[in-house]
Every structure is written in structure tokens, then in C-alpha cells.
Image (cartoon, rainbow, N blue to C red; front, side, top):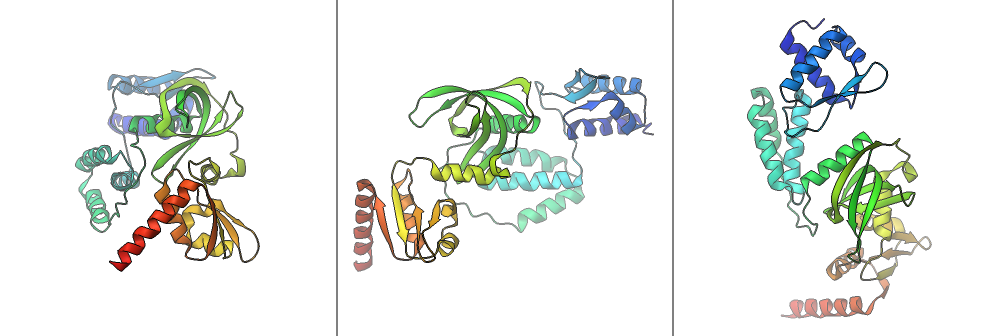
Length: 320
């Protein structure tokens, strides 16, 4: 039985953070106390600023809700190390979240016990980051966090979405997964109005709002969210069209151009097609160069002109 009040309060808070909702009976059994004691402890947490809500239903329950300020979180040793390493990685890889990640990391490291601070420091001192330049737009941490919570809690959200033609439309969707790819973030969700799966770019989402209405998660087509989004990205219309017929087996080309894996289609045992279409002309040139084998090209005039210009520039460079 947990009789020490501070220890019991910390244990109660830790439990509330690990699951979306607990019944009073479950909490009492976990802590070895009465339901009356749980109610008093919940009141103490509220006095300390933790937004604990009571829930309806059989015997009632409790959950941590969003509040006006961020109360302290409780992390065990493994969680603290994982969080610190993730923040350090985010600072080097998530476009637009570098400063936010470093601020959060500094706060976490300040309160880490000495034994954990040493482990985190060792990881940072022995890890190097290759800072590739990305074209991706900046990520709004509040938007990312809010959608992640909606995915976790299976809560329907509404938002405005800007389409490729710069038109804005209202959306209502069941959010399932967040996918990061090529400097961009995507939300995989089931659109309730269209009754179909949709992939939304986060940089085109504005005015997101929770609805307090929840849904039962449905299976993602193929049971692989990342593969589904990857396929949608690969088949999405691009500004410039470029289809290469490559004189090499599909598996060989796939190993050389992993980023285009979803766009490779075998024709027979020795040839395949690769869709190198893109909104960026330099990206098409880079994809074609990575093939490193003979190919023929079916493409738009703008792509042909750009490739000719690039070839002339390279010839001049090698003969200068």
C-alpha cells in the first residue's frame, strides 16, 4: 500500500500520464488506497495546476486534459534519456523546430540526475549530424503536437486546407498517423465528408480545431501508413513530367534510387520505367543522374530544355 503522500501523488500523476483515461476503481487498486483517497489526491493535483478532468460513465473516471499552462511531467530513466536524444535529433533534422527543440533540451538537461546527464552527454558527444539542406517548409510545433494528440486520442478534427491551386476548403477528418518524408510532414486521415482516405501536407493546414468527438480507428489500407503515404506522394500530380525507360532490372534501379522506390515499374526482367516527375527541375536532373545506366526519356518540353542547358553547362565546366 502506498501510504507516503508525496510518493503516492507522484505515482498517481505518473499513471494519469500513461493512459488517456482511468476509472477511480483502477487507480485505487493500483495505489492500494480507497476511492475516497483517490478523490482527495485528484483534488490536490488540481490545486497544483494539473488539469485533471472527471469523466462520465460507469463509476466515473479521470484523465489529464489540456490546460492553460504546461505542468511538470514525470519521466522514468529510460523515458528521460529517450526524450533527450529525440530532442537532440530533432534539433538537427526537423526543419523549423531547431530552436524549439534546443530550448526543450536545455530545460530537460537542467533537471536530469547526474547519472542520466552523463549518459545523455555521452550520446551527444559521440553522435554527429549531417545537416542536409532541405526545401521543406517550417514546421509549426503547436500544429504538429495538436495533430499528434488527436491521432493518439482518436479525436475528430476540423481544419482549413490549401489545395495545389491555392484554393482553401474546410475539412473534417479522423486523424490516424503523422508521416515525415523529404523535409515535409503529412497527416494521414479519413475524411468524414468524402468517406475516403486522404493525405494532407501540414504546411497547408490552418485553423485546426478539436471537436471533442471520438472515433474507432479503422485499418489503414495495406496496414502500413508509411507505405500508403509514400505511394500517394509518388503518384501525386507534379508540375514537370519525366518518365524514364531504363535499361536495367527494377531491383537494380531500386537499390540505386531508394527515394524513388515507389515510382519504379518493371517492364520485363531487364528493363523498367522510373517516374522522375517533380515540381523542381533540379530534382529531375538529380534523379536521372542517379540511374547511372542508359535510358530513354518521355518528358515535358521544359524538362528537355533544362536538361540540355545543364548538359551544356557541365561540358563547359569539364573543358575549361
